[in-house]
Length: 76
Image (cartoon, rainbow, N blue to C red; front, side):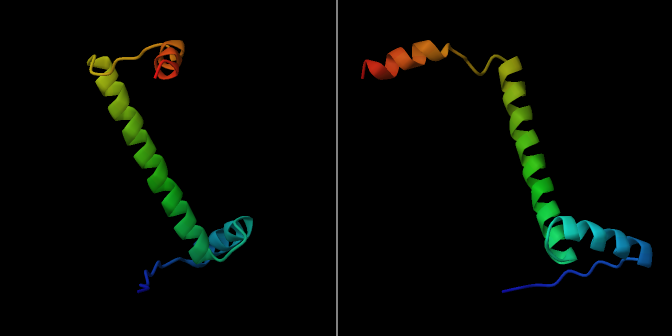
């Protein structure tokens, strides 16, 4: 099921959006969807990194050398 979202633009905004849409080789709608999805992905990635850094600072994450990991899986 498709749904429609309406964004009101003045003439200047419309021109800007149309120019940038050409960079994305599509229409304004496609460009806005792509940019919104990219922004959501970036925000999600930042949240994951932030959570990792918090856990690492709290000592809840234990890191070990890659070589030790390789030895472990080779012995299996």
